[in-house]
Length: 375
Image (cartoon, rainbow, N blue to C red; front, side):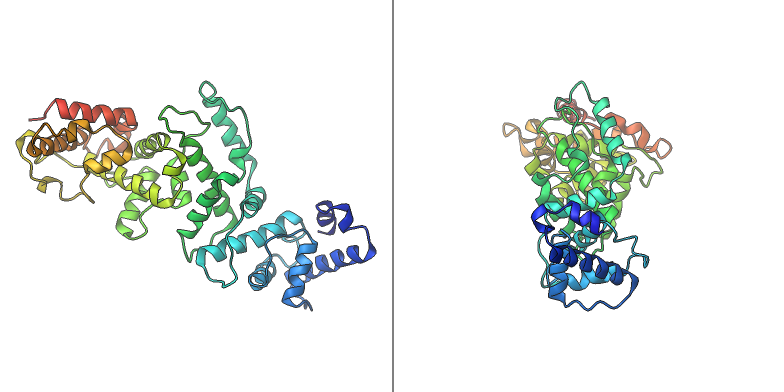
């Protein structure tokens, strides 16, 4: 720990015996704290001692939790014998205090906090996954190889903090924070304003779940969104069609349109409505046969024209004011019927629903529904 600390300090911070003694004493007390020994530091002295080891983010407001976190590591000191481990402990405390808002001394986590946790808990597999994505998309990705995906991006700091704060009272592990950061990188890199993928990595359902997409106010819908993004549904199917569909709509957005959990939750909730329409067993009403919505009453919220607009779809055929409101309503129900008609059998499940896993396919469905009325 002493050598690691010295390596990160300027020469002027280690050019006297007194400075070296302070570093050695600080390191010794960190190891004692981990071992459950007696440490004579006051809280203010702890702040100064950890700062002497190049550790950032330590305050008198969070030092109690930091000391507890150090004490919870292995008693042989192996969990705190490097700068990366000690900074990771401090950064995780800062993230969790912001998540729970439990400390009067908490402050917003910084990009250095997230970078420390990605550096400590990131694996070679994270980098391999990213570089594989570059190869798969080499024809469209013009940025060239970069490690931005496998590190916290300062441009996305507000999104990381929003994801943390959206899970108040939750206690994150270092791995969960790392996964959230990498997942949000993937989602926001994807949001380039065009459904034609110009980035290196298409977000998966697991990425949306890692940042906390769901429904914080309705446990039933939250479970349904989780199952949808995991690729499982009540019909017994499995697949990635709905996560892929969500990603295509995210790709068509700009970063500022998807950089909060609330925005992503809105999109996921709309995709859930699409999923539940596909799982209806038949188009019992609507279309040219009627305008009553009773046949769709089992859906968690009726898919609306505003929903389609939010997704970024052209709804001209559904909002044509030259047509009566009755005609416009029938056209919307024809959209429902077209979605239902794609697949509604339990045996095939989600796997056969790849015919509706892109913005282009959804747009084509709307055009077809508003020009070819199902009778």
